[in-house]
Structure formats: C-alpha cells, structure tokens
Length: 262
Length: 333
Image (cartoon, each protein chain N blue to C red):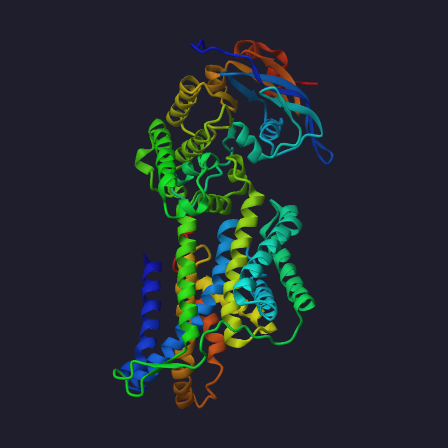
C-alpha cells in the first residue's frame, strides 16, 4: 500500500541477536533493520520468538549475543525505562494497564517522564507545577480525542471492554511521544470492526506523527495491508525479510505457516 | 446487591453495639465518652502502623511484614540518639537512617527478586523483619528506653461543666492524633496529585507496563520504602513516648493487620478509619461487653481486647473482602 510518507534512514538496527533461556534458544542470529517512518511487521508462527524480539528491543531481555543500535547509538544492557527515555514505547500482548486507575490517569502516567516540577510544588499545584500539569493534561486530551475514547475518561480501565483497553494501552504508549512504537499483537482477540478501527489508528499515528512502528500481528490480511516491510521468524531464526508481496510468495514462509512434509 | 446489604447489616449491628452501653444507661455519659476517646487514641496508633503497610502494598504489591520491626528500629534510633543530642536533631537523623535502610533493602532484597512471585517477596520481608529486630538490639541495645517529646504527661480535665466529673484526656494523645492527621493529608496529596504519586500507583498495578513508559522501578521502591520509614519514625516516636521503647512495639504490626483488612489494603483513608474503628471497638467491647458476658454466661469476661479486632476483620473478609475503602476487585474470567 503506497503511502505519502518519506521513509528515511535506518533508525533501529538489530544485529545478529541471539537470546537463550537456559537451553531454550528463543532467537538465533536475527538481524534486520527498521527505517524511520516505516511500518515494519514481524510475523511468524506461535513460539517463533516475535515477542522475545520486541522484549530485546525494549530492554526487557538482554541478549547473549548481538547488538541493538538505535539512532546510531549501540545499546548493550538497556533497561526498559531507559528505552522509554530514548523514545521507544510499546504496548503489550496481554494488556498491561493500570487497572485500578482511570483512563485519564493511565495515559497521564505516560507523561511522567516529561514532568519537571518538584514533588512539593506538584503536591500543592503551585505555580509552574500547575502550568505543567495543565500542559500535559492538554497533550493527554489530544490523545484521548485522537483515539475517540472521550466518553471513558474517568472510567477505571478494568471496567472497559477488551477492545477499548487495547486502545488505552496504545494511548499510554503515545503519551511518551515515542519515535519508535512497538506493538505486540495490537489486534489480537478483536472483532472485524475493532480491527478496522485499530488499523486506522496505527496508520494515522504513522501518518500524522511520523512515528516508526514495529508490530507483531497474526492477522495476515492486516499485515499485508498496512506494513511496508515484513520480517518472518520461525523457531527463532529469520526466514524472510521483504515487502509483503514478496513474503507472500516466499516458499520458506509458506512452509513455516502451513507445515511441510519431510 | 445482596453483598451490599450484608455490609449494611454488619455495620448496623456494630453501630448498635457501640451505642448500646450509652442507650441502655449501663454507663455514665462522661465515662462512656472517656472510653471512646481512649479507643480513638489507641486507634490512631494502629492507624500509623497500618499506614506503613498500605503505602508499601499500594506501591509495590508487597505485603511488608517488616513494618512493625521498622517501627521498633526507628523508635530505638530516636530514643538512643536523643540521649546524646536534642530531639530536633535526633528525629531528622533517624529519618535519614530509615531512608538509608530503604536503599539497602531495595538493593539487597527487592532488586534481586524483581518479577518473582509475591510469596517470595513476603518471605523476604519476613526475613527483613527478624533481621531488623535483632540488628536493632545489636546496635541500640535491648533495654527499655524512653522518648520524651516534651509534652506534659499529666492528663487534663476538659468539659467539666458538660459531664459530671469531666473527661480526662492526655495531651500527648492529642498531639499524636494531630500528627497522624497531618501525615494523612500530606500522603494523600502526594499520592493523588504528584507525578511521583501517580508513578507509585502505576508500579503497584503493573511493574512491566510501568517500566515500559519510563518509570524506574528501583527508584520508586526506594521512595516508597523511605516514606514507610518516615511513617515508622512517627509511629515509633508516638508509641515509644506512650509505652516506652521496647521489643513489644514490633508486635503492634500484628494489631495493624486487622486494621488494613478492615480499611482496605490499598486505601490510605482506609488505614486511618480502620484504625479508629478497631481502636474504639475493642475498648468499648472490653469495658462494656465483658461485664455482659460475665452476667449472662458466668464467664470470666476478660481479654476481649485481644481478639476483638481479629473477629471484626474476619467478619469484614466475609462480607467485603476488599475492605471498606479498598479498590474493588475486578476480575475478568
């Protein structure tokens, strides 16, 4: 799908990453790159190492071998909160929202990194702290409008239906104004209508904010429609890396998905 | 809805029990008010300890078994240092020690156990509790020490013209109550209005997600254990000045347990209200229920104070497991 975006230089480079948990090899020598402003999909059968790959990029797992280079800087042992500081945000496969907090508060937490006022000033909403709170609140309201969840602002997220929770999860990630957004199965468990909405949001984020997106998805229709390039993983190895059309015709990919007689 | 009705019934029964002595004329009004006030004051002390529990549970999902030991440790620190320097120097120093302790606990106990089962963390805090009890004695000694807050100990007579004989009240109790109230206001502001407070609540709900949006888990833990340490200093000072600083202080943690069940594990106001309910409840039960039991069943009638809180907590667990003010447990199946 042709988009009027300027796909830029390589922003994120994954270089021969190997990750093992004890004897289980989750990833072996996986390399690929992500270009600025593109939508990059990672696909593969269950257990192929897709989520592990995201966790490596975001600093949850530290690979035994290989390196992640983000904006020209190689990161060895990055922690998740450092990744967030660098501008890498993510959503989770199993929604990981702050269930007891309202939609508004959930998304506000995403602005925490950007808040500068002292704790004392915040406590009494004094001067600069108040201005800061208002400014961040405005940013959050823009996100809420963008995701069309105005009606649920004050609802504790635990009470929202699944599809909306996924949206709030995306909103919280957007609140840190990321330059790379990692989406772990953003459409899992959704009905057709919800999937269409989510696709629209992802494309809009990419289009309006120029956010680079790396997403894992099982729905092939979605992947083929919205992504610029696709990485295919199987048993922790990369077996394909091309445009959606090329990947669709790749024999190794077809084998991985449909099984092959040995 | 039926559950809601159960709560109403339970609360009505409790309320009826509370006013029964007065209504039935079994007690002189002045004496009754004195008992209730005594209960409220004891309740404030429970609340202070419960507050420490709630803070750490709210922000890290860890049930900190060591809270009572932290109170003892803080009280010992204040008492022993106050022997050598003025109180206004000793207290900030004690707070400094508790903050340092929080950092050490985070580094040596919590950090290696990130993402472990909550049972592992509970066991770890149990270990911390025993360590602190012993270590406190190693550093500060094991005698009974005094903390003198400079408040006159003699009870003051108030409302002499309203009740016959007036009401006796201790000034240090009043100071303790004011201090507790101040602490609650500050903490509530901190949790609800500051970005750090929001981060603390976020960490409580989901460690991984909190990290993914840039909240550094380790720093949050140091902050929350430090705040719990400050609360422990306040609680230790108040308890210590009232009863003397001794080992039994660390056992008040066990009395704070029913308080947090009653008030809700995640609610700061809950810790306060729960403490007051239990404080008043057990005093009134001890003084007025005891004689009734003696008359009706020919029992000895003593010791009600010791079990009343737990029975109350049990009843609340049955009708309202999340406590009076706790976050409603929402479970999707």
